[in-house]
Length: 409
Ligand SMILES: [Zn+2]
Image 1 (cartoon, rainbow, N blue to C red):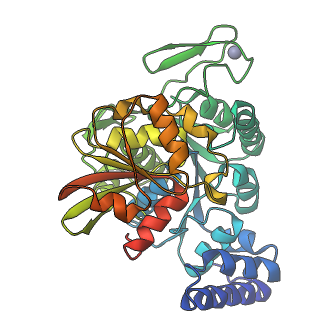
Image 2: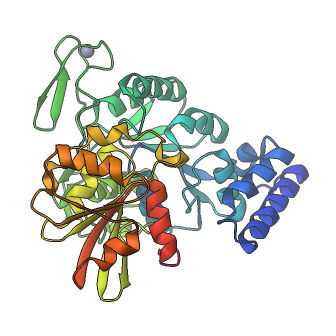
């Protein structure tokens, strides 16, 4: 790789020192502050750090952290990979990730949906992976449509190879200005934000996975990769049992996206798939923590689509603890709770906690789901019989539980 210019080298090194200092003083993992320091000293640092690397950007409303991890795991098969492992998914986090692995020939970066155009312009990434778009807390359909439109503009006229989930109409629309697209049928759990054609506003007709606009020519492209229950069919028609350790349909979909991205880097399924199977948890998600004979499995759900995915993973035979906060990263307004159908929880013991437990309690009451309210997560856990329990928490609630158990990975 070519040497960074002196100013960029210095900015990168000082950013790394700031990150180390921040870690040593117990202020988190330091990746954001380190990147900010670097960018302050050299505003062009991200472009310079990205140069000469093979980069994949991963964006979606849900699953981007996990998919970033899966792709990284696969690419480690062919070389060193720089990645924003802590989910710091804006430019400062990207600077930090690339700066920490100066010589890595590969980079896999999780990118916040809103920052994708900027990060793509800056890094000139060769591969972009797009999975799903749905409302996140207070976003509404019009806002995510605008987001998809920005993706279209950003991809247009670039040589980028896009790997996109064609089961999501909005993602399909957002990706379809790209010069090269590999379409993946990865499934779509949450359909509430895509009943209308993004091209003309007409109604979308759906039949199984297929969809098409009733009023214009916009329709689902033919996928090259297809998720078929617990297996994937590759572009040559060969069927592979996924057999990954991460639970649930959403993760099998993430794995198929990762395999398609790996192939874009010339890494074949037979070499990538064993690497995906090594991933057991991602930044605490799906980890089981134990206290006094209770094994609690931690599931993160940040928005309505995420709750559906978590319900799919949760064991219907087990009690379940739900924890909801409404701090900055969660969205301060909890009205999104009304977008989630909680009736699936009927019949299991349900415990609610978190700062906004009463909002959640009201929502469950209206859905006719019996529950017990607990002041704290510890109290909710102590109320369980010994054995397994599932926990679904939104962002800051999840991080609080995780740190109670020593930042469980
Ligand atoms: Zn249409």
